[in-house]
Image 1: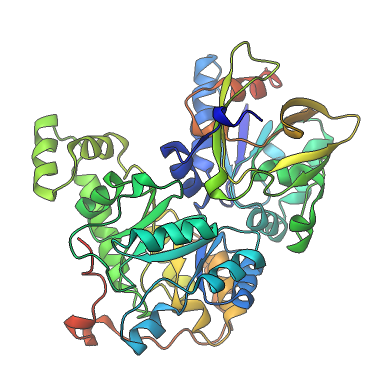
Image 2: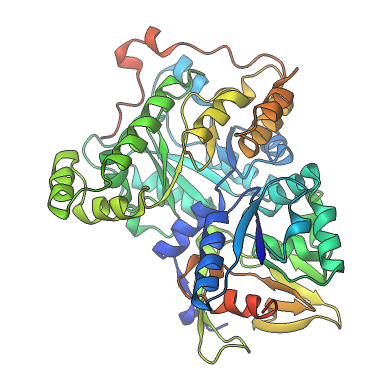
Length: 298
Length: 197
């Protein structure tokens, strides 16, 4: 094949990859065995990690990119895409993940930020990125930096879905509020939410953010996953919720079925039966402010 | 006229939009419906299997009981198009990657496929592709794309990249390794609809 005719890493290819994940569940895994369980359950991708967010939260200290060996072993174990997390602003971790062959990098607040001022310039990469957001301005700033996918931040590792709900409602509400506004009003909105004007105009026109928008951060049960889909999420990330539950195989499969049938309570009742206890979790209200992850990044 | 798009997972809305625009462009009335459960495929005049994760799609097609309906639809000679993951699902056989995950295949096209023929996401690409039914190049988007490595005598090869078959048809079944639904160029969807009108 004439290699010069191939165009790699274009916006279309990066955003296109994210579109293929729509309607799916992306699961956090820490070893090849878990990755295979996720694949068998019907996950559309796995997130290869050193530790799931609940454990990161418990252990404290500095959380970094996973050991490349873990990531490479997981890549070898499954046919579905493998994602990896890099610290906010740590473009070298992102380069290492890209070199390993991960299919998407999550520039994630779950890890300890490496840069308190700048996020990674994601346009410089061939691999697509997903980033967390709590509101429309944050989502559009990340897209402007090159993110091909957005997810709610929620509050990772808690099993408490309330923050993901808050962030999804916030983003969806802000998108709706753009409807019917004049161009000059939209320009004022852009200034107010500190987002690029072009992206605000595009969002108003499309009546959705310009990239795929997943839910993440605290999703722990099939009902939680369906709830996020009902609010308009394009798909769901489940972190600690699967492998911190009593029966990961059953939980994983049930959450996949729930996302596929999110608008059918009968099916949701069926798939939620006898799947064992969900992760114990911790309510967001009881977490001291210094341990809150979602305020990392801006 | 009713056109169905399998909506278990993947870039469903992009196909729906492309089909609606293609219908509008040719001035035809028709309805595009999304399909998550059994019972709808038999009502459709044509069907699209979208891009997505083939491992996931295959499992859920079986679990939901849609797979047999698609086979019956094919037996009735109705047009079916599969893009990317759809190309894999249409095949009769797969490589070890496909076998490893106990991939469920529909077996509507006499082909053997390679699940990630062009590598991982960093290797994904766009290319100007020559297609026999178009007079100018088509900007084809390949994302973790599969390819057809072997095709039976009833399969008509439409395009290749090196030795890898990336577009083929067998009767009314059209298989594409790329994503015509990701660009605004409707010519491939029109070619598919030509099978109906």
